[in-house]
Amino acid sequence: MTSPLARIQDPFHIPDSLKHEFSAHELAEFVDQFKAFDTSGDGAIDVEELTNMMHCMNVKIDHEEIQQLILLVDENNSGQIEFNEFVRMMSNLRRGKSNKLSKFMQLSKQAFNIRREYRETLENPIQGCTIVPFPMDMRQWNVYLQGPDDSPYQSGCFIFHFAFGHEYPYEPPSVRLLTRIYHLNFIMLADGTASFECLDQLWT
Image 1 (cartoon, rainbow, N blue to C red):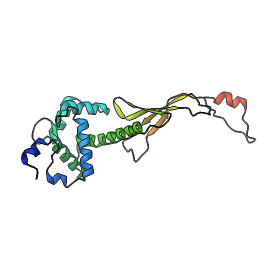
Image 2 (tube, helix red, strand yellow):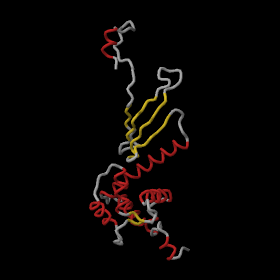
Image 3 (cartoon, one colour):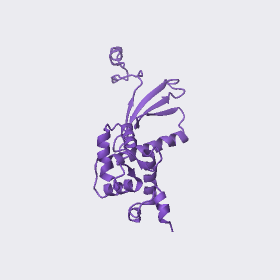
């Protein structure tokens, strides 16, 4: 049986009433998510850490508003968010009691999942493909593809921009080719040929 003192010293201790609301897998994900915010590793998320994380996800917000958001979940008036307060906030979100902070936390979970997928590509690299996430936004990638051998694109490097929307992974990311390439846009005639005038006008 865990002693009361050990519970106090454990920054990830939560009441049994909260434990029963989530699976072990969900709680482990909460710990990982909380640690990503708690960059100092002191067991609490302060104003500076929350501000930095929001800016990393392109959420522009000032310190005063951050402090007001923390007050919504800060049960012991410490000015920070402890893990048990974080889990209770996620519990309220599940029950339909959401606020701007809990919605952001839900969005950040998506960003952490994308980060995990990125790390998997580092562990199992795809030949001829290099992925570079945006420094301040994990939901945007530049992907560099090497042109395949024995093709017109051999020795070329082609850059694609991936943008993961709020509905990912239920909707695919939007993809845009940033590299200008020569390709034919032409109107094929009935006999399978195209006029040179057409080629001159529609070459892009």
